[in-house]
Amino acid sequence: CRILVARSGEGGIAGVLTLVTFPIPTGARAWVEDVVVDGEARGAGVGAALLDEAVRLATASGAKTVDLTSRPARAAANRLYARAGFEKRETNVYRVEIAAGAADAE
Image (cartoon, rainbow, N blue to C red):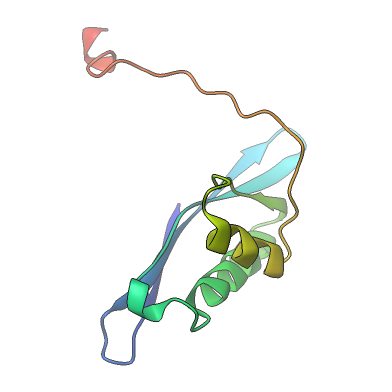
């Protein structure tokens, strides 16, 4: 897991992105989570730079694909992902909620 941080000209944090790479039986995969860009830095290429670096690192780790998810309501983020080369997939995403403290019960 890597946390990528983009700094502003003043040294503050302009944006962050989490990149997870992991092995699977057929090779390696990569997943992007938590792409966050400061409101004042939006439109300045920060998100695109973070995504470019994430794809570069994923490629260097041997991953053949990089996945991410985004709610349809996040229109600006979805445009950013499309401009960065991500393609919308027709798939179902499934989730199971794990009760708080469930791991402590074992």
